[in-house]
Length: 452
Image 1 (tube, one colour):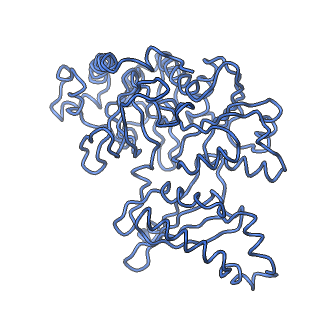
Image 2: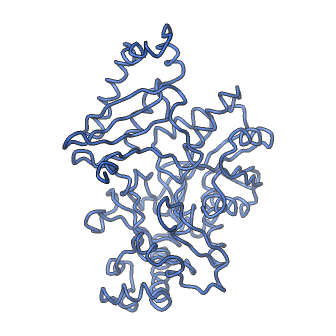
Image 3: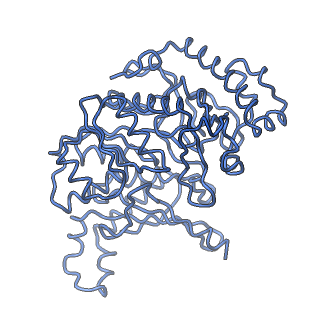
């Protein structure tokens, strides 16, 4: 289903013309209304009238995350508080959050791009959508909520956590679409197994998963366990929330950008140089239609690639690849760039381990060390622990022939993918902490040692 055929299937030449018209309006708006951008443009010798075409975009300086924090709370707003009808904030773990404002028109636009996303993922007015993203200051819950309502679907606004209740309502209410993080979808499945529920008999048909990087291997794992289609959705609170882009259920081959609202570029995260189409780098977004909180060339920190090749579904929007990871989540191990999703893709190749893992980074002497902790499957755990009567016999567990062989295979596959030797530690099923929000995959002990 295509919700907004006029804009989702627009001729690329017409789209470029629309983007340039909106870019000119945006640049003048932020220069006139946001003191930060006036200072930034003036410092870089750029005037609004110099920005006429998309080629001129590179003349504009980038906006960085710290700029949003420096201007906390409302310094980047381009609308008066009388015009602002909603305030959201990022889920930052340290310091002040980044605040985002919305005018009435911004809310309408957000609902529209979310409706596009959900429709592309196979949602219609006949569906029952269970929104298990968090509500409140986090943008996920309300974004999915308004998009589903605009489609005419029935919405269950359950928010996150309450896992057993999620399953009860999913079964009793006949949920057909689930919106949550991919790690939470796996956690709910785990709980269903503990309760003896066969979720493949639920009417659920599709999941719209986002808010954290996840691998293609995890997609296949979720689809197999739930017997559904799993579509990737992308967004961030600074831009609008979820709905910036989303996969279509027909092709599942890249996330369709809402090009008429969000202008996208890929840059080298080290040099800031704009990269050619198809190359992997950091996603930079300019909000073309935001009124309250417009951003010019915002560095998202997300690593992906873009293509303008039309999709087999009929949409002509720019497609972005699944996010490989974040530039600030990227680990540098002995000079090699490592993303958690790369390790995840290797782990999920083996049915003998579970999709629950943690990467522990430490420093031994002058060298960085990466240890991969991963749960083994319940069936394998039962096999290898037969005859172990006490913790005194734990060596029997770690030295079991099956685990030794499995460890060697995983280490080899990880080395082939990321080029770094890693340690692998197998954990008991259920022993790695589950997340009902965004999964925390990395424990970097190097920072603690640097502080001490």
